[in-house]
Image (tube, rainbow, N blue to C red; front, side, top):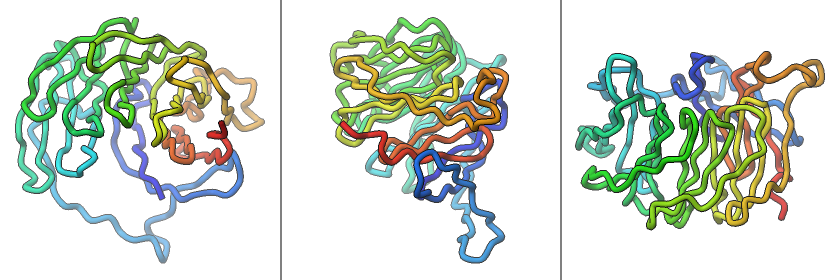
Amino acid sequence: MIAAARLANRAAPFVALNLLLLTAATAPGQVIQPPNPEQPGVPPSQERAILRDHRDAVTSLAVSQDGKTLATASGGKDHPGEIKLWDLVTLQERRTVHGHPVPVLSVCIAPDNQTLASGAADGTVKLWNAVTGEELATLTGHQGRVFAVAFAPNSKTLASAGEDRTIKIWDVTLHHELRTLRGHKDMVTCVAYTHDGLQLASGSFDAMVKIWNPATGQEKTTLKGLPAKTANVPASDNPDEAVFKINPARIFSVAFSQTARRWPRALRR
């Protein structure tokens, strides 16, 4: 079972709101409907705490691999971007990180729990010390908003994706761009590495999931999930099929229509 965030504002694909529980399917490309919480056998969700103090909309969140830290990002027209780091044991705020003059749209914590990455509305990606909050570097190159950032399992490379329809791979230690992946026909809204780091999945408003070799930039396959009745409709005119969340372990893609598709053969080498 996987958890995916449902986006309420289709014009802003970075706003993560209500959580849906999505169950697995058996057929490639099969649509998975979220369970009805009122049905027997569906466990009720339990609220543990409400974490407050952001001054504007919360746009992204990430949990460290050790489960001890939560990073939340926010920003709006009236406030610059900010990132808050929370202790998930005590449920207390550790610190607030400032540095983005515009809204922060995406955030992630490296698997080694040492580095934090953030993507912003001005096309920049920043790297931070996840323990102290110190800014380490600003990475530039995107031509538009950065909707997603994701670390490789070794914490040494970072993928970012955004409005310019590209995915960029960065060297986290040397703070420079390694390569740019091109192929999507609309803005790229999510990226995720496989657990071995050998493949990268990306989802886009073009209603496609692409699988890449991040070391070479080679596109390995494209997964098309549009239903037949809308197959000839551009994704910009059919936003319900825009992919905004992916889980690369077995490749689940989640669309605005509150459905998910499973692609069990997508990761064949």
